[in-house]
Amino acid sequence: MTTIDGGAAVTFALLSLALLSLALPGRRRVTAWAWLAPFLLSAAAGVASGVLRPPALAAMLLLGVACIGARSGALPLSARALAGAVVVALYVAFMLHVAPGFDNPVVMDRVVLGPGALPFTKQLNYDKGVAGLFLLGIWYRPPGTPRDWRATARGCAARLPAVVLVVLLLSLATGYVRWDPKASGWFPVWAWSTLLFTVVAEEAFFRGLIQTSLQRWLGARGRAALGAWVAASLLFGLAHLAGGPLYVALATVAGLGYGWVFVRTGSIRAAVLCHFAVNALHFTLFTYPALASAVR
Image (tube, helix red, strand yellow):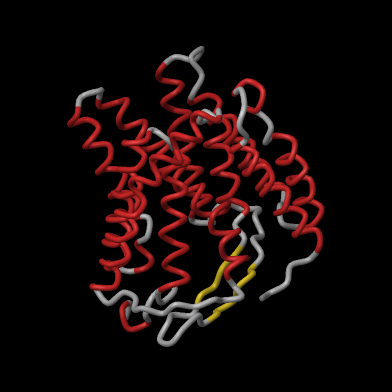
């Protein structure tokens, strides 16, 4: 494992606390902004440690303002649409790590996790993590009452096995992975960083923003819901283009599964839990991230 210095560790620990606070149960008006204090402390620690530089602060401020504008009922539709376009553009920049000012530390450097597996490198992505934080904490703002959590748990229990079986068996059948169960010492750092700095951000964007916005724009009819679900899933697949055409196809199928869970439960948390479960089972039971022979 590539070690990170104390300042960076504090930075990401505080960002993790901010993201986890989005799941706090209770009355929404009490917990809605619980994430703000740890985020501000994280940003301060990030500047002090060198993880964040001034351009990153400016980009995060712009994203926050755009998220507020996109959901503000006080602004005209044209202004909200412009703010929404800025949100999408900045999210894409954060996801692709092209927004300046972020120095994301590497925690896994070309690690080979099994026979025939591609070498795997993992960063702690502050940019992507904060994008997910802002989308959920400002723009989407899911409910957090115990009743909502119970509905999330029931929805996952009923649908998660089907999504897992389809995605992982299809990955196995296409030769993208093979059976490779392992108890890797890398799992804790992988699971922490994948859940909070990858999965949350992707579900916040593709389900919370794209699928929800398309559904609202297309209308309440059944075909509109189907169109929004399929379009968001296709975009999710295309976001994985760097992994090759087979990976795009598998990611699209996975996106359909996560979108289905989201539609049926109405819970972004259910989609997050489903997405993470698929990734975690992929890591622990199959070749990770993929067989080298499958992407040549």
